Amino acid sequence: MKKVLTRSTQSLIILAASFLATASVSAAPITQADSTGTVAFTESQTDIPDVINPEVPEEDGPNGTPGAFAIDYASNFDFGSHALSPKQQTYYAKADTTAFTKPVAPFIEIHDLRGLGVGNNTQLTVKQLEQFKNGQHKLTGAALTFSMGRGLNAAGGTYTPSSVPSFTLIPGQAQKVMQTNGTVGQFLTSYGQAADYKGTTVGGPISLSVPSGSANKGNYTATLQWDLATAP
Image (cartoon, rainbow, N blue to C red; front, side, top):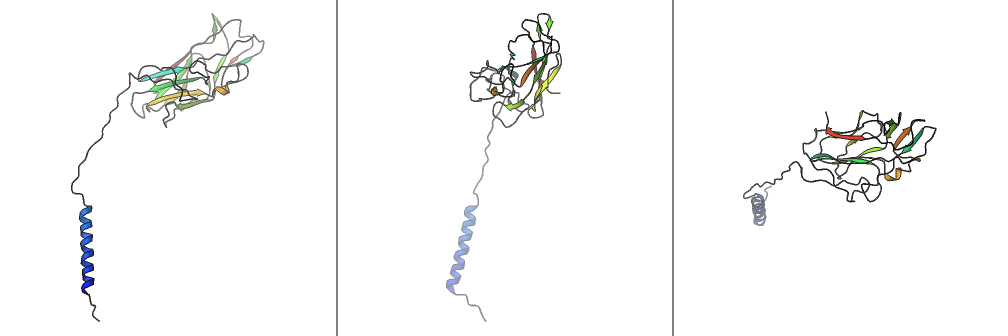
């Protein structure tokens, strides 16, 4: 049986073919061109980042330290004043009331704006230069201990530095505190939060153990030296 193709059917087929051809030609680009976007960065030597509050990041802090690679802030540690005791005693540091309007946990903060990239590790250490002293009298056997250490990206970036959570200082020996991988940013190690500092005889993350018979009347002081360097 012969198939009959009517004129109206032929017209529809021709019209459809013409439409597909036109659509194909319209979709093809007539011409193309490329453009580029550029941005450059340099090592920051002039911008001095503000110290950032580890507990309330939005609060403005004091100026940090000039330079592309520097320590911006290191807390002091006050263990209070106490009556002499015949027994071994442990005293606890107060919260830091110097850096901001409200107390915060003691902390150490650095910045690295050199822009050398990942793999250029940095290392922060602390050294108790000598035993607590009152004049020439040393607080023999006293031990300064840190706990609840945590690393934070102070500027809000995703990279978090590696911090040693707890350690006891040995006078004259450097102790690793924090390490970064070369990421540009501002980083800190904080020891707990302000609420963890209950009082100098009650408790807290930073403590000073004083053996029986070690202390005489008077004020004792020790210097902690914080060193920031490129890691080996």
